[in-house]
Amino acid sequence: MVQANRVNNMGKIIAVASGKGGTGKTTSVAALSSCLATLGYRTLAVDFDAGLKSLDFALCMTDYAISDYMDVLKGIYSLENAIHEHQKIPNLFFLAAPNTSMFDTAPVELDALHEMYDRIRNSFDYCLIDAPAGIGEGFRLAHNGADMSVLVTNGELPAMRNAQRAAGIIRSMGVEEVRLLVNRVSPSDYKKLHSTIDDVIDAVGARLIGMIREDKSIMLALHDNIPLILYKKRLAAYDFLDAARRIRGEDIPIRKI
Ligand code: ADP
Ligand code: MG
Image (cartoon, rainbow, N blue to C red; front, side, top):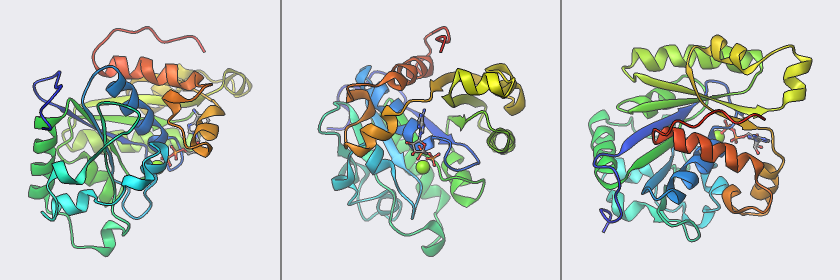
């Protein structure tokens, strides 16, 4: 059943992280996975933020956060039985995080994690992992065996420094493809700070995969319980679509914001 509609032979596991909290990881996982699914790829969005889950809100799938990845790692549910397909976005599937933090449960067995990643690669074209903030256990686990990392930052100094630190750790773990998603871009703010996107790229030291503009519709869509890509005003959704197309290897020029 899960093999249907595959486009790629081997799926790609992409951990989305930041170091600093609140930069837009969850928003980005929800929007990028929605865009990849809309482009025709079987896509799985995994909430790896155990204990503080919020991807179910961003995907408007709170009713589907029953089984979680810990159930899969423990062998209580098969991957197929633990995931849920989105009701409004075909090709998009969701795997929730447990309610309890990783530190309150038995340690994650790396073999079980790698087995789950392998099963995901066999069944999906793309899997986006919403990694927890920080550079601790959960962040490292999310990247352990991942194929790519997307670091989400904004133009603020602490976020950039944390992203740079996170990039170093991710590379030291053997994840070669580390790309940068600069979120909440507001030209007037950058002007006031005498800063540019190139400054952010230089500060973090990773190639750009996309630039997402500051857009109130992200908050409004969340409030109205409508996925961003289906929301009436959705300027940032076009930026996420560009980034999703770059993830699949298209050469899309950076849109002028
Ligand atoms: P994280 O998962 O990194 O903690 P979230 O994705 O939850 O961050 O985003 C934090 C907050 O920032 C949310 O309230 C979200 O609505 C808001 N936000 C994220 N990206 C944007 C954006 N491009 N424009 C406006 N608000 C945004
Ligand atoms: Mg989050």
